Length: 142
Image (cartoon, rainbow, N blue to C red; front, side):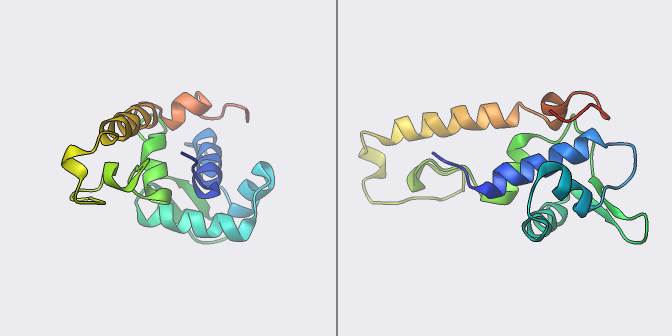
């Protein structure tokens, strides 16, 4: 299973915001430069994260973006699901309610492996916070 650059870059941006938590908003230009990300792509990702309530936007000269909640309570799983959708190593093992890919789902010999894989991935993502990745707010970039 391979996640897209949406999750990779989105997590990098959220980590930058976590390191600045409590210090006021950061501009996307500053995040893009520090993390070596495309500003245009970052704007798309931040818009999704803002709509999901993970990021707050402030307008004006000293405006920018900041985390909507403390880094300790925002998990990697929260971010990945916003940017990628429900976890699903294969379609019939998706977290999404009512997901099914074929009529053989109940007797499929391999489905249990995919569900266990999804659950293991979810456990890691959901038990890892931005704080775990970055340490205390204001910590140096890693």
